[in-house]
Image (cartoon, rainbow, N blue to C red):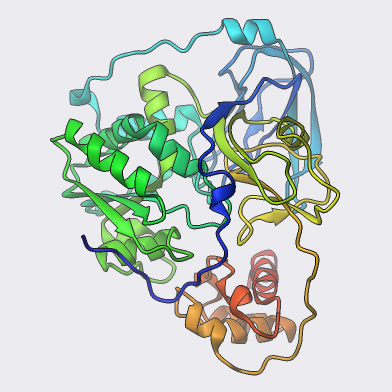
Length: 439
């Protein structure tokens, strides 16, 4: 069978064996949730609750103020303790709703199955369902799903791609979802196919997940009306980056500065489609996600079903605690995640992993030798060394003119650099400067 490959990319040490065989475990309700109101790309949601308010599981606690935003719901019943400002991973300040959890009332709540008449499903129904449930892209980008499913009338969407690559080292949450919830994911895809009538539905999964590939091949027989293609992907980072995945599976190139609908494609993460199925068939908003807790520093790596707003310190404790050898705690994957200065943070809709790493040596940077390694591995065909040099020199206009915005921050360049130059950090610095200064 044809294996789909990509240009550039790298083969980092994956370390997925630490957690890949651990089935998903439910995480016990914490005593208090701290739910950030900016868990998505775009404007933060605006709180609609205040101190002392009683809430039930699934209640909206913050509403999206504009199109590019998302509603936020509470995963548990309880009482609002306060609305406070705290930093998000990365340092940006954000409002958090603190909820003292009523465990008994939460456990008494039932999500009741409901039927869906596919004859009534269209693009408007799909976008409305996604927006009401607060669904966002759960592969890390957190783009509001209702916006992705509302292309302009001129767009002709004919291809859907399920992004099951999960190419980041350590992370196995999507892998476990594909093995354990294959049917529900396909039901979510069926809703999108019913709305748009795709001519191709591609299930993209890296070859290092043979059990997931087999699960979709087997379950696809139950959906004979969908033009399903199970596509093995070459195991290479960053195979799961949206534009990279689109090009490797369809040979269509999304133009610079454009979105996938420009080439007739919708791509969505595994957990995003599961969340859509849960919203449609259970009326359940996006209030929990699967998180991989892994790394050499944690006692017992696990894949956990975690309520949004759960303190990450609780996850570490549940997995047996972390060792003194831990030198870095990362929210997300090691290539694109964010190092945490403390454990005083919460799980969000985009939190795919919590990693406890034990690397001891962080080599010093040396001068660039113009070897071109960063250029060779860049999947977007950029000149990372130039972008970093422009950022160092404060030449931000030149960086922008050198296709700065096309970098999706995969980190391949920094990984491949023999001089240990923090290329990605300089590129992020330049992008932030351009954004803040309005260049």
